[in-house]
Length: 256
Image (cartoon, rainbow, N blue to C red; front, side, top):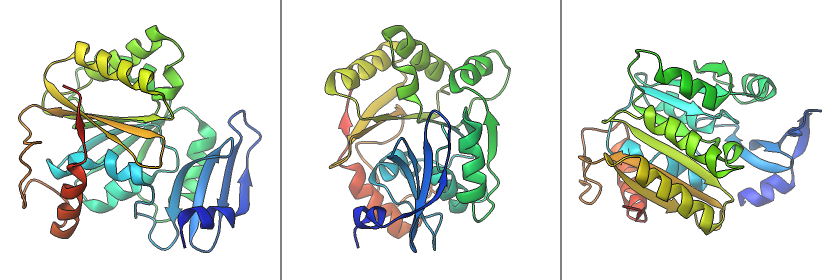
């Protein structure tokens, strides 16, 4: 049965009175989180760590190239990426920055059945980023930003967010940005700003077929993105999974 059919058969298990109108529905196979009836994440009840939405695979493509240990996720949602990453390898530490206390409560009660240790900070992503710049800490291996749409209400706000992301990007680290439901002009504007802000990373992106998401990656220049090996020791992915994802990676587009 296709995921759309599952969604049409869901029963309501949670509904908030907040401005975001958070709802949680489920059937015998899946549980999903929605804001204003727009689905944000879907969890497989039998295999909570399993990826269920196509753009999540695109978002995790950097795993083909390196073994991150310190990952910062801006925007928790239903925790799909966090569940996958913390199950993939015990060395991976995920810290999630989430502004909504209601979303955090929903994650803990409904979307963390395996009780994975995910450090969650209840704060605004941009404030957190700007604070980190001033701290003498090691930058994360990987920044995953899923809050772009909340800061894209003006050109200056776009620049402010992207600048803060670049300022927290390590020379050997990578940055992933999810752009949901944005037109070509907005996507091109984001890519242009990113090119102007830095020159140390490749910029690639994925259009997700039949979905509205565009996933942008900033990958370190030394990474062999045009000559990805058939086998690699520098990945947490099992060989079968690595081979499948390697084929998917070939569908990326370059923005350099």
